[in-house]
Length: 182
Image 1 (cartoon, rainbow, N blue to C red):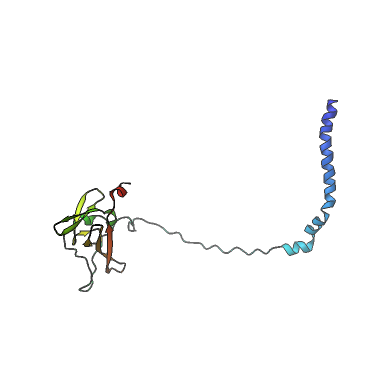
Image 2: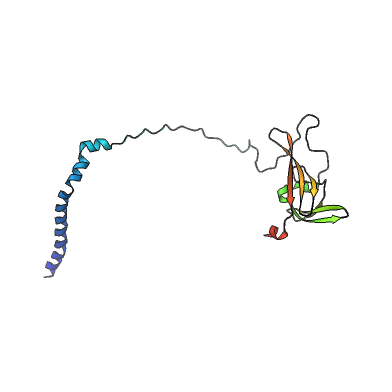
């Protein structure tokens, strides 16, 4: 009796599956005919464009010994130009704040002694300097032309790609000490 139950348990699903397969073949006969029809197959063939030819690029050989280091500051040499042209005075004595880039210097206050107003400038190594009109600071020959309680203006000399010197007015504003410590 046990064997009959096992047999019927496998036989019933097998019989149902075969019955369904037999019914399905007549049901989709028109679809099979459409897919295998020669006219349908000829109309659905897509034309594939040929692949474009691959261009072979020559590799670039990078030799760092021959190229200039982009992270080393370059020394600006004066140009040989006509009299009266704009040029920095390379014979004057350098001031201490000219060794720092302008964006590393921070104005942290102002101080007035007599009629002279000084800006207090902090360097990256936390030294404090007094700066007044006609002092130099920054690496672009920045001459201080104006100082007030909230900021200062500088006139910088910049050398362009053609080797000519041009003036640029730059401002440096006072920064709150709490902002710089964050």
